[in-house]
Length: 369
Image (cartoon, rainbow, N blue to C red; front, side, top):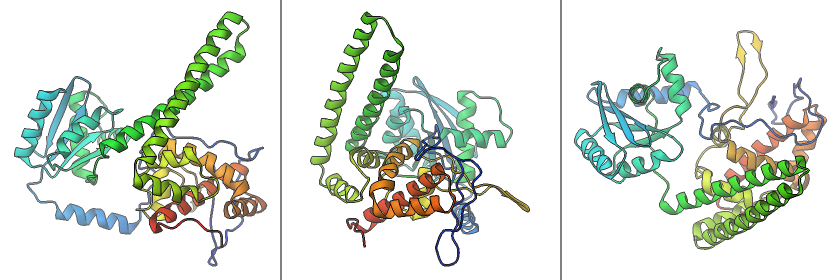
């Protein structure tokens, strides 16, 4: 996916540079498999300065703990002492872990996001006001490779996480409350049901046997009923939360934003409205990244980010490029300047996300001037 969305001094977009063309409007963008990747975030000298300032504020006796979370056990590693420990992943083991962390009082405890297994551990630690950060496993693995650690075991993973915490100081973030986690689970389940429906419909097209077709039809009927029930639960959850209801009204004031986009944002993008336009674009994965080296100027591309949000944003931008006056004008302008359809649509995704970020930040419904 190629995106070279530059502007001149007056703020108007210049003619783009694209070499890949897409034959139809709104060809789907490539999605990353990692929803929480930090690839794509800006790395300015100012940002590097802030990192060094944070490192200077860490005392010499500061401790960092990395915990590798598995289904049956928790492997831990303490830096800089190098001590390793193991506890079982059950109530007794969690109590032992929390008691130990209270005695150590580490500067930071870091866990990887491992398909939800980490939530219970992080919640137990956060309940004791311990500093916990959950990071992307790919970041830790890339870090381990960068220091020459190619082998992979639970014990080595815990050490790599601790070293990553000591070197990069990922910021602790508050965990989502129980209501938000339940809402996120509903949104995730809805997405799974839709994926199953698409798969079953594709299978039905390839079958000639009537019995098997009727079997698939019965399964599709069950999936449609389950999807209807999930939608009802999502509607009820939003109605019962004044904060979510207010956010939903603000988001839906923007033409092109519907139920799916709104619910995906409520469940998976709590940062909306609290970050700058550049940071929110990088977090979602719609910010163009430079590919320059020396005199060579590479094509700017998007990478990383939260793929589930980007998938919903793609559909919203596709609708907005036809029915939202601001986005539609922007899309036509980019296409007239030579942008490929996919490139122009990615730029519209970014612009729509920036608008939604401003709407939530200012708590003001969108208005077309």
